Length: 482
Ligand SMILES: [Fe+2]
Ligand SMILES: [Fe+2]
Image (tube, rainbow, N blue to C red; front, side, top):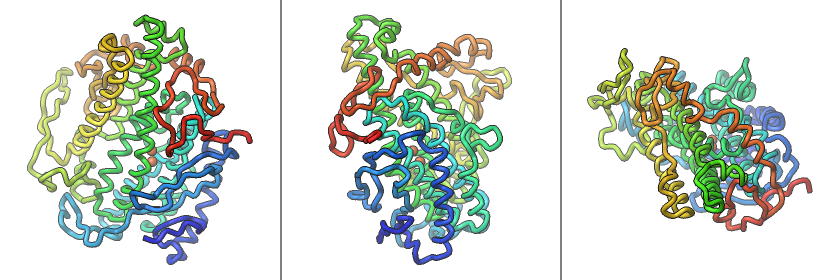
């Protein structure tokens, strides 16, 4: 597939053949750049950063590493190549040829899916814009900026679809993407979790671990879409998304490792001992894990959802790796869901499978998160030996601290981290033990002083096992102020 890398907008969609589209996107470009200057990373915009840029979509050679100033990043539009004869893999249109154009009857829901996905991309850049000032190392700073520029590219991917396939209202939606602002009271971002600022690095690592991982599962299910251009876009986004989750999963792992090392050094199991040495104690880590896992679970939507059923039926949004299932119609199967009744007690309800598609996707997500938590626990044991067994991290139950769906606190339901029903008063009494509070935030701010010298790292996080693209940790990943 031909890649035009030296065009104003690098692309592999033969943009120069469609002058109208090219002009429209070239008009959007300066607006995008002014959004980036205003809402992208604060400071560091003139620094040279060792960044990866997509130069093709081939699995073995799509990335190119070099020093780039962020505003000069080559964002571009990349879709995976078309598979000739691809058919729709699920729902009522199962087996029919995949759509190369938007089917009129699904125009509105399809636009909504694309806008909702697209909106999260600039939102996360906005949320993270101040983090550079407290980076624990140049390696981490570079990773932050890599995530940020790629989220910018993901916005490009969704805007390309809106411009190409949705005419005037698509162009208006593309403009609106640059007008909403994370946390703004008048024009907030669409999804709740994307309106909270991320001001410390533990939150950033938890966000890229848990919230980007929601993105992974959403993208996988859209990669199954019967609307072929969306499927191809999402498949390429997933290759970039893998790095974001790597940043999160290994980031948390390195904070865990450092906590365990400080426990070893102090010879004490008291969290206070880790704090005295400037680390993040495991109980504080657990509170952040509880928070980010639960808010990210909300992003999957309600357990019982007619929207989810419609998206599946109409072939817009499939399941994670749909090919793993035998039955792609999912019409006469059910999903057993424990639902709280009037008295707050849980009773199993049989939900038609299509209506439970959000929960089916959430199941896969929870399993993936559990795999990471198991890995962190192995790190604790590696450092602390047998003593580590008493200090295990754990995923809270999926019913814990929910704001959307059948277990929502807004509907008056509360659950402990084991998933047992409790009263609102019991929840309130334990809140500070289960979720981060102002003291945690103040402490993290206190220990997170920037370390911007090559080869140096802050005392609250262990260095990575290896650097980026075969470079050592000591490599000058960001040429700051030179
Ligand atoms: Fe993204
Ligand atoms: Fe991401």
